[in-house]
Amino acid sequence: MKVVILCANYEPGGAQRAVLRLHNQLNNNNIKCICIFMHRKSMDFSDSPTLLLEKKISSAGDVWTVCKNWSRVLKAEKPDAVISFLPYANILGQLISYFSGVKVRISSHRNLSEKELSKPIKTLDYLWAKLGIYTGITAVSKSTKNSFSYYGKAIFSKLKVINNGISFAPSALSKDECRKNLGIDQTAFIIGNVGRLVEQKNQILLINILPKLKDILLVIVGKGPLRAELDNRAAELGVKNQLLFIDELTTHQIPLFLKAIDIFVMPSNFEGMSNALAEALYAGLPIVSSDVESQSDVLLRDTDGLESGIMVSNDDPEGWIIQINAIKNDEALRTSLSERAILRSKDFTVQHMANGFITMLHQTKS
Image (cartoon, rainbow, N blue to C red; front, side, top):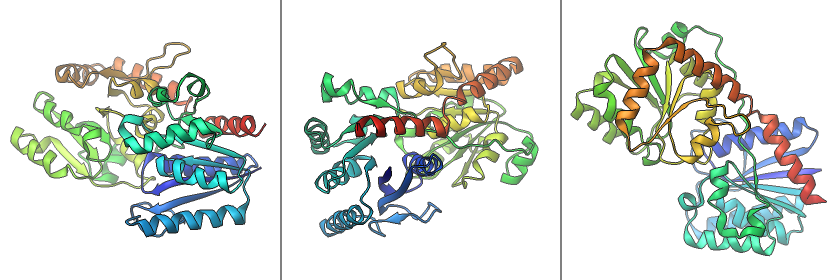
């Protein structure tokens, strides 16, 4: 079987990393697979992928170029299946795949429909599902699947949840060595967050509670449009000495960061499935997270009720303060949370993700 994975845009995001991991794992499973991105949205990603357009799409002419080049790829490669990630790859990519005679066309939804799809795109997505442009549909989490209930019962019941697989090796260095490597305070108790500085990630909550988190340093890895607003809020509250931003870390530096911190905190307002949260599980960190459904998909295991982190409502900042301080002051609780995190991490392997797609490929082919 020959598979092409098409992803809409190339930037350092969770969907893009999942694409690259899936591509590698399918090849490791003796399924010939190539990976293609529609256009380059960011220069921050260090890999050298195949792109249908070397720059960000900015005109109707660019869209035409992408469509034309995608059609040429399909004609040259003659794949048995196309797996698409993100809305424009699902809509444009799978329509062209359909007319190019590709038999298996699997779309993969990576975020909540109401957060990611405009009304016109949602209408097309519904039609593509109804008309059979998609022969299979996946969602990255249960909460993501639930947001596509507009498909109707018949199609919705066939939508398969395939969680992201994480490729993560905890750092072998000591905590002190990791902090020294990253230039982080050697003695502070550190709560850490990884994510773009955007409203979705809600880092403002963490800064707002810092005045009541005495002797705690907040380190945020990420950059984005809200950096100045977050800096200003920290200055207003008089907690700039408790806050450190790290603009960007490489894939190899993330394990150092997760080893360097004491608690992973993630107050996201919504997620599809958070790679950062899954990586924190692999690192064996105590976790405090928002209680939105997508986060509970990661932290709670249905089969045995395992709770691998503490979830708090974003409407309850006092609850965040209580839980963070409780973990800080209770070594036994930190150890218990760490052990549960490591247990849960075993559910998010790359092979587990690949197995889900391999099953879909064979089911839809037959």
